[in-house]
Length: 196
View 1 (cartoon, rainbow, N blue to C red):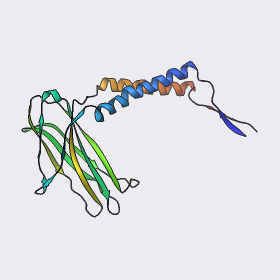
View 2 (view 1 turned 60 degrees about the vertical axis):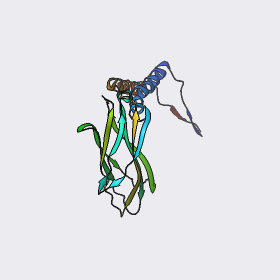
View 3 (view 1 turned 90 degrees about the horizontal axis):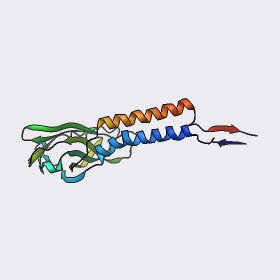
View 4 (view 1 turned 45 degrees about the vertical axis):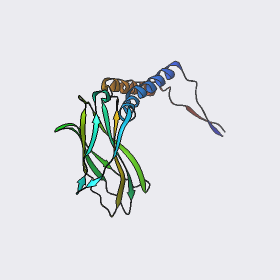
């Protein structure tokens, strides 16, 4: 007969546990919130093919919306064999000035379902004046024998928060310290006992 009898958690176990969870929230958790969940949706635009490329997208932005976060989303469908990635290059422009520019790849892994919808955060930009801004989309080359992509959209989020990297690194440091102290003191592992 066997069983697991965890020993009582001591003060050090509680401290290291709180350090790990607090660091996780203040570091990676805070960064994930700022990068992908903060702000309000300001506008959403379908990416439309035009003359071998894509139709430019015009959006109205003003400083009260700053910083803005730009995302690209789409639905990838596997047709046969191993699906090749579909890449896009997106730029947010104020006239000729590039405020944000990034590439993004939509991919299907071997274990993914036949159809996957995903959204990729491209980054944030500061808006200094009220004007019409342009979003330029390039790429989107598709190996039509293996994959199809549909419902490609550009989303712009207003008042997105930018993560303070000092807080992020402080959180990661506290999280790792809690983990290492917990391992060193041995208070985080339950005791396995066997009995006949």
